[in-house]
Image (cartoon, rainbow, N blue to C red; front, side, top):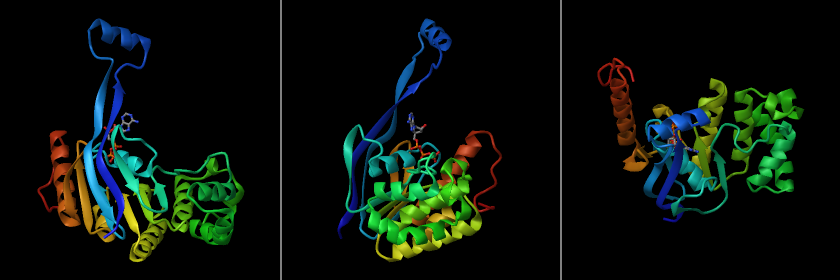
Length: 259
Ligand SMILES: Nc1ncnc2c1ncn2[C@@H]1O[C@H](COP(=O)(O)OP(=O)(O)OP(=O)(O)O)[C@@H](O)[C@H]1O
């Protein structure tokens, strides 16, 4: 099998600042408390994804999923280790990622298309199809800053999927927008997957992840704790979420009672 993505011992640290004003800085300094500290968001993460695989990244909030996708996409450089991607890459990593707020929908199709590797001729050829799928109608010539979050996502998704990427990275974007469009995106992603391309998707919706992926990577505190079948990864997520809610003082129904 050829590898589409290689993640090799990736570590990423962030600096957390505890003081954001001179006043709190002074108070903390007088109390000899730290003004900042290093936080490890990814801790020696390694994994490979073969061409044609659809992989779900799961974990409770803050476990490092988005950071890992950003490193894979090249948006964020790792501190140590490396991530390699083979072929054309498209990432929907933050809502509206790649769209410029001051440009119109039409202009963004060309700009974002180019960023994602399409030349003008290819964008022109696909333009009508992109606009039709995005269903932004009369807003096409409005700056995208006036779009609703659903419209924003529809356009970003439509451009990205029309670039026919070899590797598609998707972070939570399907949580935005109306249910009909979501269904349309899911159908498109299933088509994409069946065409033998590679996808890594982050979502909190376990049913969706089961629909799209057979493999799940479960992350906790920036480490991979499970890399295997999606059902085990999904079970882990349900269990960890329950534990987290319980530790926060919420009453949690027993396992199996309405996930
Ligand atoms: N730019 C940043 N500066 C400082 N800390 C950051 C930054 N980006 C992420 N973090 C921290 O790194 C940790 C991992 O964040 P990340 O967004 O990767 O988690 P996640 O698993 O995707 O969470 P969620 O499910 O909430 O999206 C979090 O504790 C987050 O606060």
